[in-house]
Length: 118
Image 1: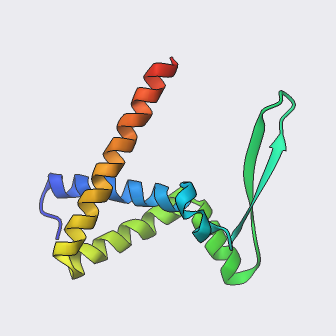
Image 2: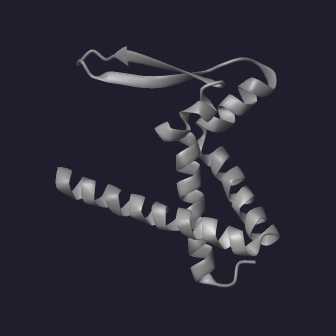
């Protein structure tokens, strides 16, 4: 179980990274593809704007909504990681640690990019 702030922070960073992986990253677009249709439009200033349309009805539509919502997916990703940690502590710790390191690296990269672009 979670034993202190360090483990809580690892779980938090791992949940952040897993959620971003599922909701935003191109590598997992195959998961979203059955539920989302990406639409690109050119704005009046010439920039391309991409948005999604949710496909289907019923459970398919519900899953599409879930996969498009960072907050909703975050709850499920956190629950999955927590259950993994409780049911398989050794493997769960490894997976959570890897995701946490990747999450922290992503945050660092976002900060560096922002500083560069200022």
